[in-house]
Image 1 (cartoon, rainbow, N blue to C red):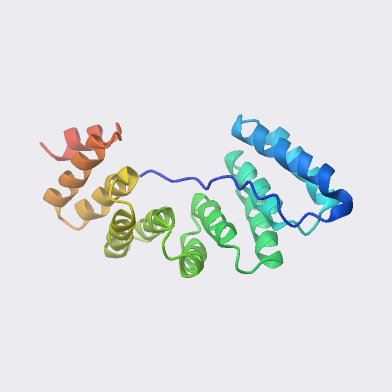
Image 2 (cartoon, rainbow, N blue to C red):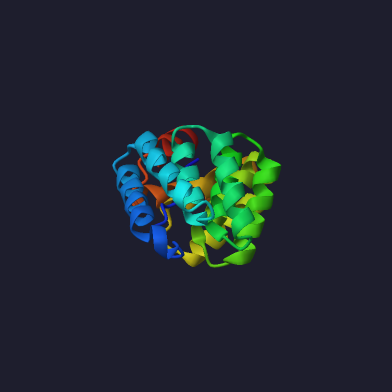
Length: 202
């Protein structure tokens, strides 16, 4: 199964005027460090933003994503929850929190976050793919297939969704469908699909 990680946000809005330059500088610096894989350093910059702008929801979300990458899932969830408290319609915070809960194997709670995120943005293919992972974790194979299929409908070249859809199909006895999905995923560049094709599709 392949997890699609949340993207970093680069929102520079809603800083108050008196701290605008400093807060933005830390925010931009944090994002640059994050993109370079320096997650601990990025968190330090986001900490500085929040000292100046304690109600900046995007910074909480970005700091949460950085904590998630460092496997601090509980710390990440706290940040995403704070972002949601500040902005109850913050789609990315729900979807990111769902992923951290998935990483903790708290599938039922993760499902609620994905449901809310998809309710707020029903056109996000990545959200359906990741909710499919949650449903697979709950052994809701039919629900997982439906989510992966929706992700593919929204993005017909969504290689991870093809790859992921193979597993619940196989679990439900649809070997031909599973092998077709893994073949498509391989064609689209998912190298991991080859091991499933060799193991299950000969």
